[in-house]
Amino acid sequence: MKKMRIKLTFEEQALGLSPSNPDVYREYIASKAPDSLSVEEEVEAIGVDETVQKGMTIFPKLPDGTPFFWDYQIKGFFKDACGMLARVKDKDNATESSKLKAYRKEIDGLVFVQPRNIPIKVSGPLSVLERPLRISGLTERVALAISETVPVGSVMEFEVTLLKPSLDKLVIEWLDYGVLRGLSQWRNAGWGRFTYELADEG
Image: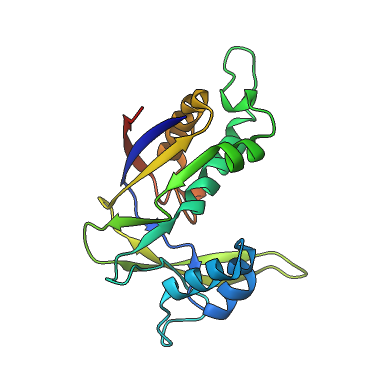
């Protein structure tokens, strides 16, 4: 077993992922939690103000109002990074991720993120970002997407426990990818880009 301590500092604003409407959250996202206790825990953490717009995405909050990421959102980022990096298979430039078989199972079963709630030490007040969102269907239309954001310079720290120590190279590769692409919502536009510091804990 190997533990890695990771400190992320956001170089771009990061956008909230959780729907502000508790019914949307309960029915669509929290229903995927492993048990009903998790559902209630996650819904309660949203702390929705009834005046907040129904379609807005936010950060869940600790009782003192501190925004946080869920542990599984970091694991989701790892899976996304690994999936994209697995495409880099050319002979002279193959990534470590391209060598990992059944990467989703490996990350689910061998990579663990703590704590469950990862507090964000914000560098200033939270704000709101509005942007157009193109929706394809029978007809193309544009909707307005609204997200709560944490400011540049905000920091979060978490621990990654690896049941297979050799996965440490992949965690570093995924973090390096996040430096380029970002973390959380709308990362394909560079939101949530970060720098990181790493400390091995044995």
